[in-house]
Image (cartoon, rainbow, N blue to C red; front, side, top):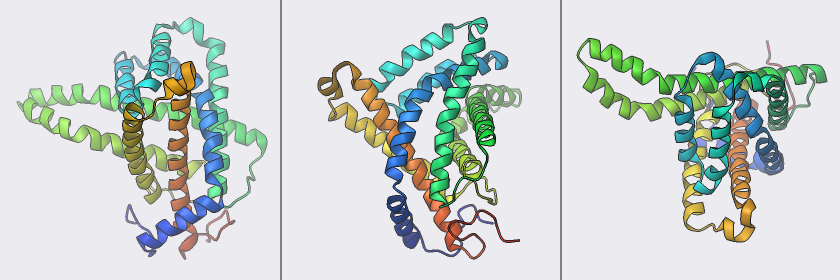
Amino acid sequence: MAILDTRGVGALTLLKRTFKEFSNDDMSTYASALAYRALFSLFPFLLFLMALLGFLHLPEFFAWLREQASLVLPPVALDQVNPVIDQLQEQKGGLLSIGILVALWTASVGVRSLMNAMNKAYDVQEGRPSWKLALLSLVYTVGIAVMLLLAAGLMVIGPQVISWLAEQVGLKDVVVLLWSWLRWPIAVLLMMLVVAVLYYVAPDVEQEFRFITPGSVLAVIVWIVASIGFGIYVQNFGNYDATYGSIGAIIVLLLYFYISAAVLLLGAELNAVIEHASAEGKDPGDKRLDS
């Protein structure tokens, strides 16, 4: 099956249906709820992420994390995130015992909200029992953290390993040049993979897993463009500090989370539209694939 298989539905028709479903499902409200949850889950999730780092010995991860944050967050939001990274970097393992459990549970609440929004995109009612939802949200939170750390490890340690191997065969300069060109396409593909996994595991529906889906491609591309545009707007036109004072950075971060959540849900709607429009898929409201 093709990576971007739209199952016979035209691109323009898909986009029209996707935006119509996004509006009909009131996804802007779900995006607002997800942004609110993300704001309160961000720092607990980072705390849990830092705890996992204690097992993986990635001292360069913090520098990588700052670099990624500087690429997608406006400077005013970075002012709030960087001190948290500093504090987490200084924490010792013994201080993170009970805190890790609290952080994991808090972050999992945001994942549970995402699961509810995905169900809405697929027009299904949640049928999993509460205990299973709680367990799945914890597992998915850990899974997301592990995938992020693996991606970070690939981006941080990968170049060093590749450079060392290339040096052994006398091709170091060539490999360094190639990596400078390929690192961002690889990062984008990793993002698409993470989003595709979220689209697969979050809703209470049976699906055929694909590593890259049309929804994940749309979500990541629109998110990158929106992040760049939002950063330009905040730096040049949005005077949030003058309007909101000391909470200006929080407002910017919350707005950025809203944009990110809306884009993520838009991609889920696209996948759902393709699923419902295809003879191989399911009707709206159905959870199981036909045998």
